[in-house]
Image (cartoon, rainbow, N blue to C red):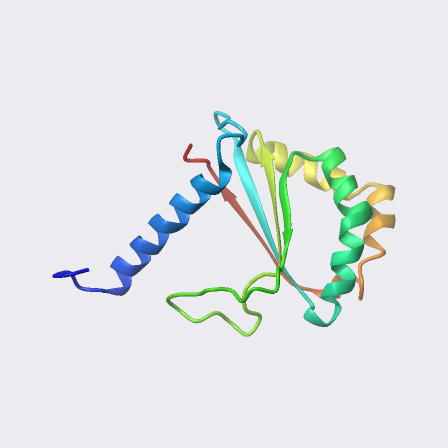
Length: 150
């Protein structure tokens, strides 16, 4: 960056641009087309690292199957073991999320109606009872609502 200052603002803009470009490139030509008004719920979980391997095994079974049957799941990802690259402000003691999944919704209203119904069924309660360490193993759950740029 010859002749330009590397301020936190310019670095943040450069990082955002890189993330957007990588996201578009990763989506590839087979990505689902943008839907007018659709929102994407990005759910990040900070799951107890001491129980994470157990969680990963259990999640690959009924968790993902049930969620895919009832929700428009874009993807479900878990920590790969490759260290996160974080720039800018330091993270808190929990560090980066180790579970991320994305749900496509027609609207926030649809989400507010449908998600509690899906997670409130007897079948889901039975599946969720298998969470290693119970609900307390979720050290933090973050949900963000995004719109597609493409």
